[in-house]
Length: 254
Length: 250
Ligand SMILES: Nc1ncnc2c1ncn2[C@@H]1O[C@H](COP(=O)(O)OP(=O)(O)OP(=O)(O)O)[C@@H](O)[C@H]1O
Ligand SMILES: [Mg+2]
Image (cartoon, rainbow over all chains, first blue to last red):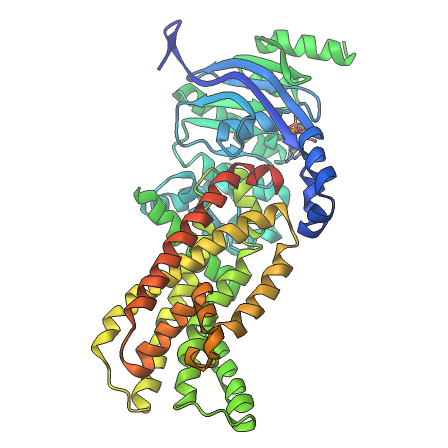
């Protein structure tokens, strides 16, 4: 492990480039693909979409880090790379911890299972032993405050309820890194407040927080450092105040 | 290492719940389905077509029960990753556990239906033979073949979404060209070699031999095991080279 300035970096992007190929060409099916082989192959090669371009930065252990940028800038892609769900096209993403819950809209639940069953499944897939999850399940249910809905299939949940459940499970998995993608926006005011307080509490305990948000206010509230993502690169990295000022100015506010 | 075990158990339970709603129905359908099939074929082939095969009902179910496993697992494979999109896009775990959990489910249902085959076996006066100790080897070979094919189908189907239809057609062809309804010895002399090219044939022949004749031919045991190893390796290779794209294509 590298040590810089006495604080270890926990997440590191080294010259990360990410392309999304235009798979919908081959989604036409095997028949389409075989009958149009030459054009299909060339489309596969040329029609790819670049999201991140040679991006390098690092996040220090325990540092609450914010990412901001306009729609489609590639913020969720960055979190996917950190969570290990996506792989960079070139470059390296180094994450030095194992349990990395990714909190996005529509969390990783199976629609046909009840909330209770999903808590166990989700926890186990995040890497917590089943026996351990069984001990924590009541605490998760209590935190989510979903009441009797916990025994309903999650396909009947509203997006706010899903987010509550996802957040509740994640904070019960001893996360060393918490990746949070805009979920503060869907909770009701009460739960937003609860989330923010919990996030701050975790941050104080040393959990590394990566927060993607469109709210410069939340970012200033939670984060110590921030990155402004634009055209696939870090346009600016600095304190949340600096970043939000620059970003708002760029957008034409203030 | 141990956490995979927990993950596999939870995914398997989930699969069972998602498919059958209750555990009892899982068992019920896995037995009722091939029994009804067997009855239908008995009517068409024995009563109408007057086919001359000894102990035909026993012959039918000892081939149809394991075939049910193959058919269920392979037809379920095409969409297995698509059905689990919410898990794949958000959670970083070994995705091969998803098709594995489905196949273990079908394997479990097959295993609990084996006593029914044995009951038929006893009813037709077949001695419970020493060669049944090879049953686990046959099951392992079949498992490797099914899992290998399932990994390949489920991964490729994400990129070519019409694979599902092709699988349905191939399953039908495979069903009638594998000696499930007829003994492999009925094949015309100059075509008899084709059974060696069908990976499912040795397995089904072995089940017939185990439950009807009380012996197994080592060449089929060897062949089915080799097919298992080769197909599983190819399937895993395909899965492994495509798995990184799952989250971005779904
Ligand atoms: N699976 C995918 N296949 C192809 N293109 C994709 C895929 N996922 C994202 N993209 C594209 O990559 C770009 C970045 O997407 P991403 O979701 O990372 O943006 P974002 O910064 O999170 O945006 P938002 O603020 O709206 O959430 C978008 O232009 C999107 O169209
Ligand atoms: Mg996003």
